[in-house]
Length: 130
Image (cartoon, rainbow, N blue to C red; front, side):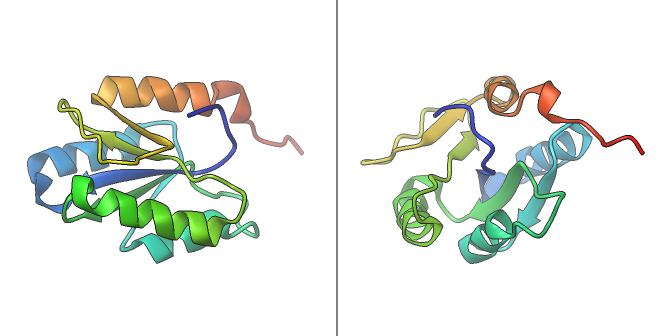
């Protein structure tokens, strides 16, 4: 996974309970522009909307099972995104490596934040002054 100007899809297990709320709160307070979506199609629509000047850097998507759903989500993203690779991430203390996964990163919240900082450096956040 490399530096990019693309949006990252952050996957979260639907049954994560308090961990899910913690991640949502962290995203809300972080410097990253984020949006929660209901399915992969809404995620791709959000990522592909070049008319939105405030396109999110992180799209949060809840799934039933990251290990089971990731290969299908990547396949759908590959088919609809064209030549642009859409990176996926997961916050987890456990290693979640589904077979054949590419362009996928898993780590603790601190590791994911560090990776996002590398992908979206602070200098990319600027505002035009009138």
